[in-house]
Image (tube, rainbow, N blue to C red; front, side):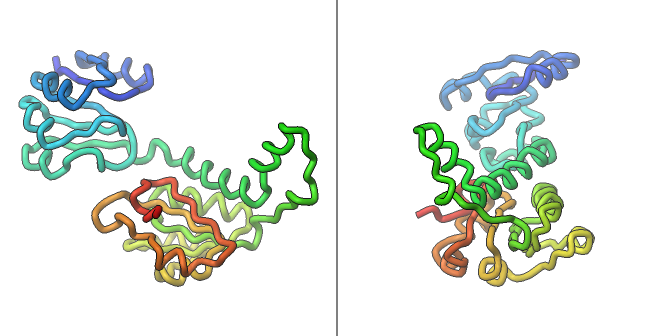
Length: 237
């Protein structure tokens, strides 16, 4: 029977499914040294974001056949070291699609309707109706950087609010663009013309700090940047 080591929080339903065909051990909160000392003898390692699967960990896992990440992306795993060993890498890119798309819409609605500010002022006994006058998403332009599954899910929902869409991606999905009446543009145009920009790309060397001072200066003074992907894509300084 295969031996699986789970080092990050996984829902009990997922653990139950794994236990139907494998011996599963859950060991959360391991230090890097703890993981190095423990990984030998396991066939599968399951992680989320907390565990860093370094080359040293991969080398120490002499029986490893699979490294699985319960989430999007593999940026906390040394992919090259795993591939060199012939270890199969798995992730679950579709799992958070709806949750992230709805979160993006939630951020936009919270901003245009001043919901967080209104909530805070009400809780201290103030009624600031005139100061918190909002606006509408209808007619605003949303720039979507990355039109994979999450970017598309955001786009379809934004169209329900009658927003205009601008798209940027290396690989263009023309069917999605046609269905939503969107258009692909270069990154400069997207930043210049958008009222909101939402980012949905993986963190890889090519995308690290892809949005920095130059891109931010292209944006309208009133524009809003939403990053629900990886922090390193934006040069936060």
